[in-house]
Length: 231
Image 1 (cartoon, rainbow, N blue to C red):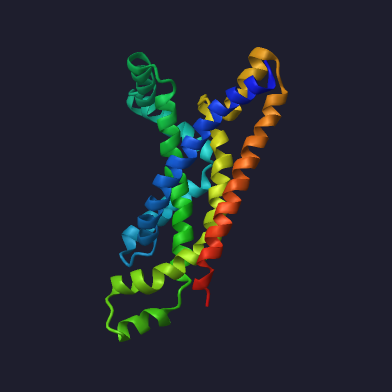
Image 2: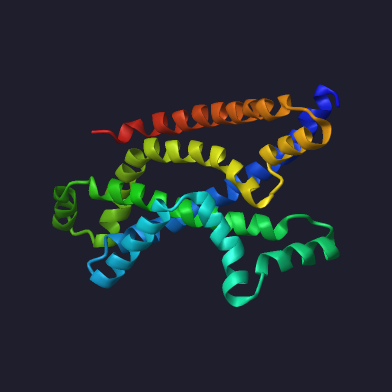
């Protein structure tokens, strides 16, 4: 295979990596906020349950979580949901790996939602109580104080740690190949197995480096735009 053919083949896999990245970000980032509020809840059962879930998800390797989501429904309930989804979409629409990708997206979204929730919680709790009290003195409600005073400061404070998690996310998409999802690393392994080409496996690093470089520039500009919230 020529260099261009290998690049095109790997790029097909990288599109799957980008899909996992985008869906995880779109689902995990918003989901992290209610989890953060639950972790800060004054209602102790909700707070304890939320903290235990976050502790388990953050403590168990993401690869193992992917295995649990994909295999456990079939093992416990004898209903291989994702395998059936694979067959259904392949037979009816010719789409491969739909069930496997769905399992990966669920695992990634839950995992990153828990990580994002801790970033949100830390950002919210870093705001001094004095700012809440000043808002009450001005006659603002609790929701108005959060929207008009707290939220903007929280956003500025969480951008750096969020940026780190987002950059880690694109690299973590490689874990999807543990259940044979055809992301870029799986594509490179296929070339090694079928064409005896090892160099594409190392070449995949270029795709990640370029995308991480773009992310670094974009996130850096976002952080710079929000710098005026600093005290």
